[in-house]
Length: 610
Image (tube, rainbow, N blue to C red; front, side, top):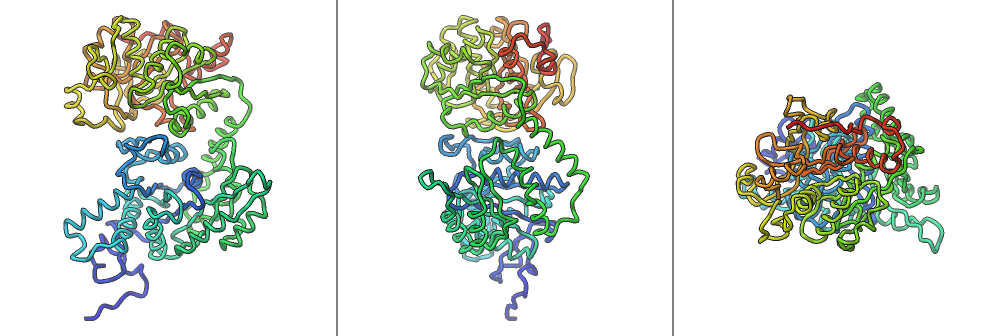
């Protein structure tokens, strides 16, 4: 019989695409998918990358989550890497590690913080992942003899992955952020797949948002929208009509530029939003709400009936309270130094920056962050750089460059009662410094820096490779940490714990990204000299938190994991809260604990269990 195509592409959405090979419609759908149940908001960039698509997308997603809807964000990257693990921070910002261990783009951190929800590997896609899935299916006969092409098979895989995410996370709305800008070769197939998705899902199913850039050349003294117009033209040439336009700019976008953009893009003025520089990205959700963009999206997707108004009222007030403290006057002013080798690029430590911002709001502290490049200071000169600070963070990193200066920073903090937080490599630097200068192991080092060192207090251990089953790869993702009772760590984490188990203390979950550990053969010597390993692997001799008791130092703690990755605006990270509170006391020693907050300042007689 001759093939008779359906009148509507929606009529041939089939599970796994098994019935579509005799048709040019290729619309594979995962089991359990319900068309019309799941909606999509797609955020695309024009003019230039790096303007804040993730910030806009996560802010809009937060508004819909506040209304009681389930949202699932996904970042779609054009590069061929399978994940972000090998990317240089100077090229792509920090690597954000999910709880399930996937190394992702820093925008996933923005989504987790704004939405206060843990994401999974299903929320992050690269071209490399898509092509690998397509080729795996081809090798296993998944296309029934068809010649495999970008259209329909690669675009079909993209649509399948989006629908699969919607089913897995039971999403009312999937927020799709496409990396790069419209017109890039590497993301063209994503945009084509999304155009097809809108066609197949039907009306009121997909809302397209274009993020563009309004230029204001200093020599002209006025805003120019021509670049934005040309970028929007490129998007429409790809077959996509935007429903909303977000105008990125330094200053608030004025009516003349917005009117030109609205007219050129066929988007009503009420759906054109000025996304200019603000005091904090956390003010953007409320600005979007005041502009009515959340209601516009609900209308475009026909979702007003799903709104839980009581849920929205509660969530909105909680967020507004946080923002009021964030943008209002502060009681305290402190200076915290971040000593790392990527200090010239703030995006390399974006989660640390945000974790500090959260704590500053909750503790009413105006935190002046100083970025200190340890590759540019001599170890003998760190006192000149640190002496005016109220706290120091030594962040994570890899390689030997700048490490001796970091070790010198740790020593200065320890010997001068300067509040200290060591993260991953900063934890390892603290172990090396203590071994050298307190335990008198002069040549203590890490085998990462010196493969021939006689005293590798930090090392890759064969038994730990066996324990974690990681071979030569990194220890990645969420892991349980057993906290020693009555320790500083247990004090800080008492409200986040998974239960107290007597002398073993609390168990908490944090995220790791490292290859090297404390060599267990040195632990007894280090602890006999006064260093406390207050957080350990629940079953194996893997050290995960170190500290000096409050009786010996006002605040000295290090974590083998990355605490910044779990910091949230409404639930600030405990280790950072302790650091900021200690820094406030350092800056104003005459303040009483009550004037800071007793909640984050432990008593000096706090002693960890033996």
